[in-house]
Image (cartoon, rainbow, N blue to C red; front, side, top):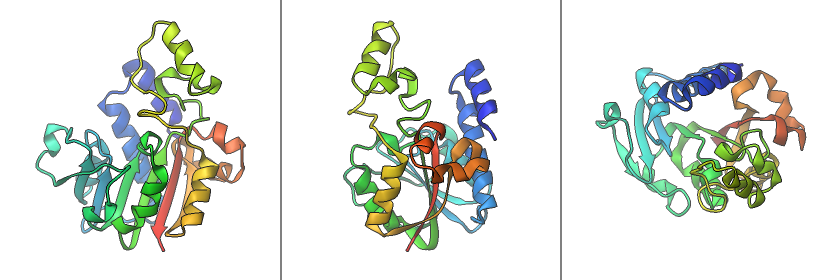
Length: 232
């Protein structure tokens, strides 16, 4: 369980590069426990890569990594890597190529058209390839990101109260942060039928995987949902 270490790191240093590297390392560890190859000979796509921390950890383990996002904000150490420009709400994901492993970490809650993404994600995967999808669900303790816990009062009232306290924020519901639910997302995946769900777990305490089988409860107790998906 990495959650206590993450909370300690965030309290001391906020969301610095080490904070994100800890998350990536722990997620890669979990993928290994699920039998997902990570190393030489594995082609990987860091989708919605931001500064490239997750993909960078895959590169250090020998993967051939392509990065993709709306704009190139990669750390200088990754600027030599292949980069693709993509808008996940609009673009045809099939143009990005096919990979053994696709990582989409902490991006899903920022999509205005999440079903478009789920419906096209299978086109990114080679036969036998996997998609690691993780995101912060709305009813989790950090669902409102920097205006948590006021998000429990709703996507309109919550931010207003946060703002009234004189605090700044980057995330704006309906603009760059959207209400997501675990149960609804699982239902969309099953209805679409192009992806199969291999594993589901709370990302920062994967040992409690059975928690995600409990409707309603999972929405509040899973700080971040992690799904391991495979193209059918």
